[in-house]
Image (tube, rainbow, N blue to C red; front, side, top):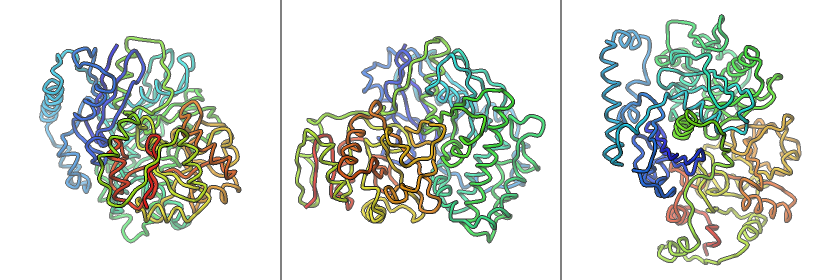
Length: 565
């Protein structure tokens, strides 16, 4: 059974599933080189079909991940509908429902036409699945849980297909929804409007607000939390759902937030919205566990990209195990669409072992790219059979190395194969990386990659929760404040850790182990391999371009180590 999953909204992309296994998945941004690219993902569809060696005519299904999707123009130009308030809400409430139905059908026809014109397939192969069902499917079917387990499946985001959260039970391979909240009471929308209010980019820079939060004064921030509590709380009669507390719906809360938060400090606003989000998500998840009696949970949707909120949720006493789908924003929807389509007809689970789901390039392809590339400065190129050991030696000498190896990791987090890595014990490396290439905001922390055998040395992880994909923050042990000081948050000492196993990424694991053998530190600082404002590199030419344009001095690409003079 061959299924193509398509997400054609913000951060669009495509996935291929064959007989239950996700063969590949790529976001459009990696090919277009436009950060969080949106709209019909033609390039990524072509790429995943090429990687999987599938003729479009042999596809059993082409599955869209939402019933309704806005146009590219609407998604690109948000200022007209983001900076709104109660007046606009009252005006929009008068819109004729017949007009909205016409718009829905028009967009549906346009989206079908995109596929038919591109792939030449029959329209009866084209399916549509609801937005939050795809988030739930990604979380449930992509988790480590078995079909024999009874799983509480939660989704929360800004909104999609009219909903902002759902509660489902996954059991015996099927999802049964038991509660949902419509988009008027969205915790995710409040967070994104605050992001916009602070002069940052919604749907992209929320992590900057989260990173800034620990710097805000606690006492003064607490006074601001009521601004958000007065918008949305848990439903008093059904605590599986959220409710608005006034006339103002969260789609129209920007002017309310602007008026209430005017003249408040930016870091205190950040701390207030982060604390509110952590608290209300904790309260919601705890209520869901109590109401259902199910203590194993799987989560999807953009709100669960907030690793500090995930950490707070993990502390719920009754919770036994939690799985957050890796990079669970809308980029994950194409995978969810594949799984939802597949498991409507099948009931034997196929494990998702890792998310290195992009293209892979041979040493021959890499060597050809190097030979034809015009470097701005003189470089030395050497080939090593044991490239991981050579990189470890460079890191031990306090050099910073860009790494391009194997299949590209899928999702928003760099997981070692398209990463810039360095010695995590040297705080100077933060400044070096920022001045060389990243230009990150001064308050933003970097993250550690730690080999699984020695995670307890640095992380406080009492429940032994899995964190292979950087979806959870952890408090750290005292030794971490020295050994991996450059890879923990300088204010609250938390770490958004990647726990690296030999099974999931043997070469990256070997590299870190080599570094540990040399230095006694079983971790490296890991950040994404890209120029500021651009997506992660994908092809060899992307890596060479970034190396050429930046202050990076070392690039490990395949089995080659390129050094600038």
